[in-house]
Each structure stands twice: as structure tokens, then as C-alpha cells.
Length: 565
Ligand code: ATP
Ligand code: MG
Ligand code: MG
Ligand code: MG
Image (cartoon, rainbow, N blue to C red; front, side, top):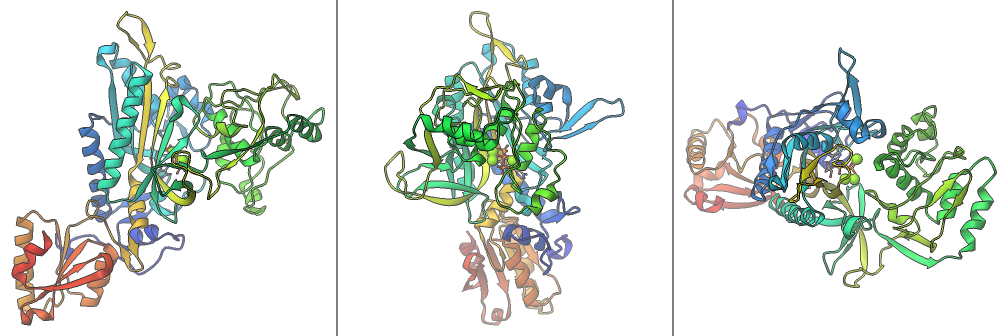
């Protein structure tokens, strides 16, 4: 394509709100355009091209693994989410609205309900299973703090896949296949990544795995081993400290406990966990458990978890609505808590591990439940342990080598779901004996638009983007440095046609601009290679540039084809 004909609005201006390289360069390179600065983006021609390339890699590998692409309605009737119980529980990330007939709808932040609804209407027999359906489509999450450009948008492109099985074993087989498929996808995209355990306690010991693109700017802390494959999200990697005195929790609890109130201090002391982990766990529980848990206790000041805590509010315990975000922000970014929080008489706090994340942090008591009845804990029997996050230098559970911390960008997440949605929504199949059984599900996500940001976080320098081969908007940029030089232009046109005919996707910079400005744009856009036709043409030479390291090589125009291949 000819540069002069393309809409590539490059700029020197760094957007005010941008701190990450990917955010800055994707905007400055004219790949994307912010819409009102609130986590919404337009994709301009180059951005759309990269997005389509990434999407194509994802699609190719999934199709090879036997998955089938569908496209689900983005607008979702609330009734489906009422069936699963998530409509009330999901919290403020869920955008709810009404149509003219006063019916409730949502914009899908994830599509478990939609897909279960599709499958329950079409699949009746074990003979039709297993099935793995996916889409690459828009999602909307009203993120409390959209930021970092495509990294955390409110509207974003996700590949979301859902598999349906007759048994737990078959679902596990598919889960492993998806892990391998995701590895192929991220490898093809040229990314350095790590598969980490995101939940060590749940179903069958390997409930959920995240795919972390390694980058200092990543929002997640992960523990990794340099000697083996092991890696875990710090949220899931906990170690048991010494068993603690069985009397101690009771005594601590009594200290904070008054006849009328139970404070978060009491709970965290009682369970011997960091209050931060406690609220996270309870919050997640309230979100995902089917109505058993009805209490959430406090908000972390200025923390990202606030959103989730507020979400739990919807479950009905504790009204935080009158505490403004500004007030929380004003209190600084230190993790603290709003308290004391009253746990109403008769409310049960149930902490067990039958949920997605983090519950195994509670005293390491995966199998146990703690019930708060009235104002005291009953039925409680457990070995109490202090649990803390795994530290750097702790030994890897697989090979015994020391672990270290690093940062990652969550680019994918796969999960063994079980019957959490199929049961309440009645997605059943008839087994070989004609008996109705709930389908066993897995779910698999990739942040396709986030991947653009992740690729640039891992591949850039101070001048701009350095796209990997599979993600680059073009294979080659062909630059004529002086458009007034007829010989340069003639060779440019000739090479442009030859390279196109050979199947290369070429960006032909034949603009009138100064050579310096064209090179600046080349560096900013980050196409893997450039051919520069300049003064040296008098000596029968052109320059072959590699964007990574800006390495330059002089070659004769006849040799160009062998160099680029
Ligand atoms: P995060 O922890 O970053 O908020 P998540 O755990 O909420 O992500 P999932 O529900 O696991 O996200 O969704 C699957 C994938 O979608 C994530 O692994 C991530 O790559 C992508 N994703 C999630 N939220 C966003 C967002 N706000 N903007 C862009 N991509 C996102
Ligand atoms: Mg999230
Ligand atoms: Mg996450
Ligand atoms: Mg996730």
C-alpha cells in the first residue's frame, strides 16, 4: 500500500494520560484513537490490520484444535443472567440497561450464560459431545479504572471459548489441549510468556491457569522458577507458616469482638490471614457462589479491589454506597479498611474453596467451612496455620530450586468450570442410559486487543514499536528518501511491484516529506524491515534495515529478494 493514500495520523504528541510505552506508541503511531478518554478506542487502519493479524493467529490455532467459531449477540437479555444468579451479583462492572418496553438487558462482559443457552437448545445427547465453541467478539466491562490504553479498556476484544463434556475427565483433556493451543498461539505471536497456576486448590488440583506475558509494566506479580516450568500468580501461591496455637485465634477473636459487632479485624485475626486476602476471598465467594454467602465486610481504601467489594455489596450485607470513591482516594493508596463493619445477626460467612480463586488462603483449610452464626463462630474445627504469600527464595514445589518474583500481563485465562452454569440453567444431556446429566464445562479466554499492548510492552525501544513477525501491520516498508530523484522513484516503483508479486505485504513510503521525517515514522510504526532507497543508489546500493536494533546493511537492489526472504 502507498503511504500517501493511507490514514496513518502519526504524531509527536504524547497523550496526557499515557505512561506505558504501548499506550504512547499505539496512539502516536496512529494505530488507535481514544474516544473521550474513558477506556473506549477506535481502531484506525493500521490498528485494525494488527488486530486482524493477531485474531487470525488465534483463530487458526483454535480451528486446528477442533474448536468452532460462532458469534453471539453482544446485547444479552438479563433473564439469562437471572437464571445463573449473576445478574444481581456481578456488580458495577456489568453494564445494565432497559429497552423501551422496560425489559432488562446487559452488555456481555463474558458469555457463559449466552453460550449455555445456545447449547442447551441444540445439544440433547451424549453423542453430540464434546463440543468447543468460541467467538472473537466485543466485551464490555465498566472497569473502575480503565487505563493503559488497550491494556485495560472498558470495551475490548476477547476470544472467549466454552467447552461442553459428558465427564470431568473429558473436560480435563480439553483443558490440557487448550493449554497447549494457547502456548502455540503465544509462541507464534513471538511473545515471551509463562503459564501460571491461578488457583491451586480447586477441582482436581489444576483448576485455573493464566497466560502471563512477561513485562515489567505488568499488573500481576507472579512467582517463577528458572529451573523448571513452574509458575504461579502470587494470589494463588501461598505457603503455610508454622501451625499456630489453637487457642490463639479464639483469643484474638474475643479481643476484637463485642456482643453487637464483628469487625474485619476480628475475622482476619481469627482466620490468621491478611485482611486484604480475606476480603478478596469473601468478595469472590459472594460473586460466584450460588446465594449461600451473604456478607462482605469492608472496602480496601483506594484499592483496585474496591470494585469487587462494591460488587458484593449487591449481595446485601453492608452498604458502602454512601462512601464516595473520592473519599477513599483521599485517604491515600495505603491498603486499609473501612470498619468496624457490623455483621448482622444470623448472617453466615462461609469460607470454603469451592470457587475460582484464593480461598485456599484461608488457613490452608481447603475442605473446611467456617460458619459465623450470630456473633460467634460455631462448628469450627481446623488446623490453624499462618498463610503468607510465597516469598522470593522459597523453594519451587516441583524441583526445589529457588523461586523469584516477576511481573506479567494477563493475556489469557483458562478454567475448569464444572457444572456451575449448566446446573442452574438446565443444560443437560441424555447419557447412554437415557438419564439426564448436567454438562461439564470449561471456559477459555484471550484478551485479543490487550495482546496488541502486550506485544509492544515486550517489543519496543525509545523510538517506537517493534512488531513481531506475526503481528506486524506490514512485512516490509519501502522508503524512497528523495521523491525528486527519478532513479530512486523508478527503482522504488519497480521493487514495490516485484515484492508485492512475491507475496510481501509492503508499505511503500513515496511521500514528499523529508527523509528524516519518513525514518522517524518508520521507527515509530515498527515494521520489522525497511528497504531505504537513497543517495547510495549512485553506487548501486540500497539499505536493508532491521527495526530491532536498527541494524543497517548495504545491498545491491538485485540482492534484495534474497535478503528479505
Ligand atoms: P484482569 O485481572 O486483568 O482484570 P480478568 O481476570 O478480569 O482480567 P478474565 O475474566 O479472565 O479477565 O477475561 C479473559 C481475558 O480478557 C483476560 O485474561 C484478559 O486478557 C482480557 N481482559 C480482561 N479484562 C480486560 C480489559 N478491561 N481490557 C482488555 N482486556 C481485558
Ligand atoms: Mg478484571
Ligand atoms: Mg485476572
Ligand atoms: Mg482472569
